[in-house]
Amino acid sequence: MNANACGDHCITCSDEGIPMQVERVDEARGLALCAAEDGSKSTVEIALVDVAPGDRVLVHAGVALAELTA
Amino acid sequence: MRYVDEFRDPELGRVLATEILAAVEPGRHYKFMEVCGGHTHSIYKYGVDDLLPANVELVHGPGCPVCVIPMGRVDDGIAIAREPGVIFACFGDMMRVPGSSGSLLEAKAEGADIRMVYSPLDALRIAKHNPDREVVFFAIGFETTAPSTALTLKRAKAEGVPNFSCMCSHVTIVPPLRALLDSPDLRLDGFVGPGHVSTVVGARPFEFIPADYGKPIVVAGFEPLDILQAIRMILAQLADGRCEVENQYSRVVPYEGNRRALEVMAEVFELRPHFEWRGLGFISQSGLKLSEAYADLDAEVRFSVPGVRVADPKACQCGEVLKGVIKPWECKVFGTACTPERPIGTCMVSSEGACAAYYNFGRFAREREVV
Image (tube, each protein chain N blue to C red):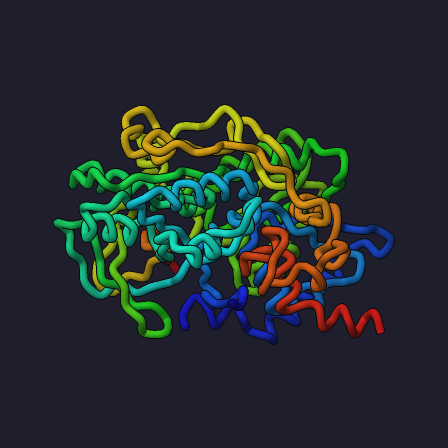
């Protein structure tokens, strides 16, 4: 197995987050559907940030940690 | 991509490199530590060190969560994974970290049900789908992964998932930095501070570095221009005789961190009196365990673990690499007995580990130098 099997965004590292765009928000469950740079989509926990569709967030291990601001 | 491409602009990189060259005093040697493995990875991947003057040295710090997990902890994880009926979930890199008698990956090959997950939430999902099995999540990482584990445990409690538990090996960033600064082995001139840990804890916890130790620290992002700019900012502080915490990564890091993340962590975790770090030994109040309120979800309470301290293999110099005392290629087994395919030490396991990063991106340049 290659050390880079998980690519640039290795989730074991504390300091490699993935920028993602929020597509849909499920407020009742505290989850959002987000898309990454490569178009892949995943469900992200959004309890720690206030976001709406279109916002960009930094995701780490399935949790949005921060909203990306200009 | 926005927020990414503009921080990889080669022209701006050259401008920053010229400014750095102009900012250094010719006769002086500068030694800066990049605390986090993400920076180490970027530095080798983009060849950032090749853009720096010869008298600016980057030293790799202890901020790779996989690399700092001691062997005894891996053995504890394997012991739980081998319990009948257990599904053991962990992050991918953790599976390859060698314990005293093999890795989790080898335990999986021998029949243990060990599954790789990308998030603790995935482990919780596995627990819900397998109500007749015990699902244990091996939680590792600094303050960036800790909120994710904390939220998952809150969810497990709220939703009542009795077959889910967590073996908590989370660590915190400030105590090892203090230990490094107290170590007589190392003379540093400044720090490139960890970017994403700071999204959670903020930049404020690093104020002790200038206040108590008189060293500048600049919290930085992970693109090559982020790192170059941070180095230029540290040099500017040294040239001006300033010594403070600066935030290069303000597009992501609020100075005060993420209050909600800190609250959820405070609810779910408490500090362990001591925690063993690979290569750094025991550091007081540096590891997290589940708080009283969440003790029923603590895998170390639910299962018996050996909890035996295991010394690192003699040939392995991960400790010196993690403290920045030696460079990866100065280790006796680097690239020979120890490779990413068959790691002896943890620094070769994770792609964020200094040895793996150097093995993958930097060794060819080094070979050219040697010739």
